[in-house]
Structures are given as C-alpha cells and as structure tokens.
Length: 636
Image (cartoon, rainbow, N blue to C red; front, side, top):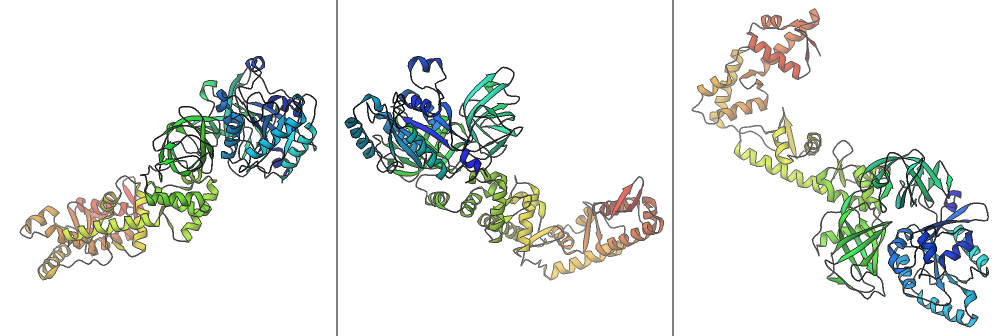
C-alpha cells in the first residue's frame, strides 16, 4: 500500500449515547472533539467531531466522533459514510443498548469491512460484570462484519487498554485496502461556515480521488461552480488532499448560503442530478417494520437526508432480513453514483429499517414486475463494467449520448468509459454516429426497420421517383435529432446495403424505377426536348402544362433527375445533364485561360441568356467548383 493510502484511513466511533465515545477519542489522540457549547453543557455529541490518530511512523489517520443520541442519528449517518474502520463502543456499566444495535446495523449497511468492539468505562464495574458484557456483545455481533473482530476493554480515565487498542488500530490500518485515488474527487459536505478573511469554508471526508488547490469544483445538486481557493487536512494547509482524508475547503466566490450541508463537491459533469435512483434494497434482520410498495422513507447518503417514495419492482412488501429491487423516487434532487451505499429510516416512527446499494443513479421510470427491467437491473448489480455499460447504452440510445454522459451512471472516469465503448464497438454491440456519440445495435436495427418502412411506403406512393430526399427521410425518421447524428445512421445503413443513395435520393437497396412502355416513350421525348433546348430549356411550369394530361409527368421528371438525365438548377430550370457538363468545361477552360470569368463572359461563351448563366454558375458555386470574387468567378 502507498504512503498516501496509509494516511487516508478514517476511523469512526459508533454506539449508544453516553457510552464514552468522545472520552475514548480524547484518550487515544489528546483531542476533544466536542466543539459546541451545547455539547460541553449537556455532555453529549450533537455534531460530528474530528480528530486524528498519530501513527508510529509519523503519519496520521482521521477519526470521526459521531453522535450516539437517537435524536441526532442523521448526524451519525453523515459521518459514517466515510468510515473505513469502525469502533463499536459499548459502556461496561450499561451494555448493549438500542442505539448500539441501530449503529451496528447502519455500519453493516454502509459496507464497512473491518472494526473493533471497545468496552469502555472498565473502571466503573467489577471484572465479572465486564465478562458478561463481553459475552453479550460477542453474541450480538454474530452475522455482522464484527463477528470475528477483537473486543478490547478500556478505561479512558485510568488508561487501561488504550495502548492495546492503539496497536489493534495500527495493525488494521497497515492491512487496510486504502481509498480509490484514481476516481474523480468527491466530498459530501457535512459542515459549512464562514471565516473572516477567507469566506465560505466546508468540511467533509474526501471519499475518493484527489483534490488540488485551485481546482474547479461543481456543487451538486445545485450545479453552482466554484474553485478550491485553499485546502486544509488535519488543520494544516496542503496543496493536495487525498481520498480518505478529512478536508476543509475554502470555496471561492460562494456565500455560506450557496452551499448546504448534504451537498457534494465534485468535478463539473462528473455526477448526475436526478429525482430517482434504482437500488438493491435490504432490510435489517432485526427490523420490526415492513416496507410496502409506495412507502415513504428517509433516505441517507453521504451527509444528505431526503424523503423518498419507494417503488418495489419485484415484491409487494419487504420484511426483516428481506431484499428486493426498488426505484427510489425523491422529493428533492440528489446526486449519486452507481455503487454508493445508503441507509433508509422509517418515516413514522423514525427508526432505521435498512439500506442498500445504488445500481443506477439516474434511471428511466420502470413498471413494477417488468421482467426486462429486472434483467437489466441484475446486470447493473452483478455484471462487469462492459456489460453494465451496454445496458446503459441500450436504455439511453434515443438520446445519442457520449462517454461523458455514461461515466457518472457507470461510476467510472470518462476516459475509462471511452475504452469500454471502443470494446463494445469492436464487438458490434454499439454503433458510433460521430462526435463521440453512440447507439446500441438493437436501437439502430429498430431505426433501420423504421427507415425501410418509410421508404417502402414512399415507393408505393411514388413509384416513378428514384427515392426520398435525404432531408425528408431524416426529418420523418428522427425529427428532433441533430442532422449530423441522423446522417451518420443513414450512412451506416447505406454502407450495410440496406438502402442506397443516388444524387441525394435514398431508396430501398433493391428498388428500381419501372416506367412501363408509355412512360419510357415519354421519358425519351422529354430527354430529346431538353437536349435540343441545350442552354435555354423551357420553364418547368411550361413542361407541366404541355403534358398536363399525363398524370405522372412530375414523377417522370423526378425520375429523370434521379437517374441523372436531368439536373435541377432551381424550381423552374431543369437542364440536360450533358449540357451542364459542357457548361462546366467551358467555365473551367475560360478561368484557366484568364484567371477569372465574369457572368457576361460566361453567358456569351454559352450563347444563352443571363438567367440560365446565373443558374448554372450558382449551381457550380454550391458544388464548390467555382467561387464568386467581386463580379467574377474563380475556381474554388
């Protein structure tokens, strides 16, 4: 383990009120974590207290002293989320009490992996009584992460057992896994205050990543932006803070009222802002409450508390020790990440009933007992990153999203998501559509079928037209999508030979215009008409009037344009394609000879009128063959 990882372990206390947590921390560290006058007066911890334990090699581990009183359980939850090693405190003179059991359940729900049971106030009772308390505690922690944990008896007043406890903690810190330094930084805010000369300061545990002084910060879920003007760790200024450290951050440009306790500091765009989350919900084995579909619960995550309605997706109700998939629908916006742990408390009476793991922090709304949705949740819970990302792309394909969108939903850095998307592209599971955007192959197949249906209907209605104009197909297929994204999809379908394109007209790949004998004759007649007219063709309205008895005349003209026999210069000017090519050659030769060419010169060279010369030159400009410079044309 790295030096930083060793330094970044957070030790937390938990247990019933007045069982000696604060006194124990003072004995371990020499620091009094009760900082409020009310706490001094009442002798209980209301807010979170913070200290640090000096390690033998000179480094420090943070210690959080959380409140034990039932009324302040939400403050306890605010601190418990960053704990790596738990000290479950039980007073020798009282033994296991209601908050002892509740705190143990909370620590288990939050996924804390290791800890130690500390029996305090050993100086107040006889040794035989301590042994009874020890046996009771050992029985109570069976089936939890503390079932094999050491049990230490201490007295904060005499010093009994303090050195033994320190050595146990030192050993756990050495064996600890450390924090995730590779993730983007994230700090749940548990205190906000103002300091004269500095402005707004927040404190919280840096639960992942690293934060540098001067870094840009976004406050979630409000999306306010700020900068880390200054950082402190253990009351000492630092240029960089690491995951697992208690951090004070001086926020530039924000007032105290701009940041609430429960907010989260993270990089811009790294977290979603949502009113829902999909989760695996678990109830504590000892819960006396049943959570039914539609129940209102208090939701605790990091330092945030918010009310939510629980939609049970694969059960009618969940009782003690039970679990299910659930969609949590919040009454306020939240910012979560996949894999985050949370705790829920019953709405009334207010007591801890369970918790769980976030599977999707910004999901679609699901119907209950929808097997497809449940199968996707199973992948999100147990699948590898690549499998989970494929499910997310499948769900959000109609939004044409990028790696930056999927990163917070997956709980990974954007650059990692780019790698995963490339792997999915290689496997054919997703299709790139430009600009870093992707769609799932199943969604692409659905769009391809829809596009082919549109084209087939068009061919039935307009059998003499070579196909549907790209812009029309684009607007009918996905009217609200960006042009470039739809074009990328159409290009992919054309590359797959599901359809073809000729002069801007798209058709089903196997489609061919069938004119019939009469219309073939008409086509030949029209071709001769335009060929003979050369650079002075009749107006389109004149042709339509001349052949008004032929119902399909407009379709025949469109088919001739589609086949390349005619070129449409504007609505009233269609010209023989070979004549247009001759005009192009005349234009090129004139400019190459003289360096430029005026409209009048071009008109005279063709022996036509100004109207037709203008139409031709504007066509060449659109094709970027020529470019207008002043009153003349040059080759583009």
